Length: 109
Image 1 (tube, one colour):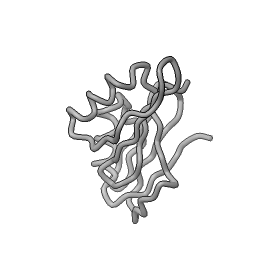
Image 2 (image 1 turned 90 degrees about the horizontal axis):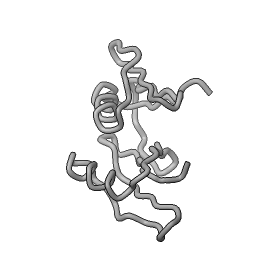
Image 3 (image 1 turned 30 degrees about the horizontal axis):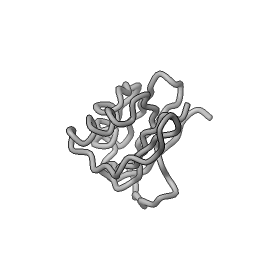
């Protein structure tokens, strides 16, 4: 897979959101389209179009310290749910992007 494309009425807003909060870098920007990448090699493209938010799409980001990342995202104004998990195991938490799609932070490698 080369890229995951997300259709949204506001591609620049979503690209800026993910770049600001998760350290992604813009690779290419034009009217109605923004391509971003992180260190994992996965690229996200935000394309002008209708958004149909659902739980079918969830962008997952790794966090070694899920509780600290949860606190940082809340401080940045991101709507985040409760932390879930158990000691010495998997921890995760879902949040919501500006377009209504679900995002998740997790310590799952």
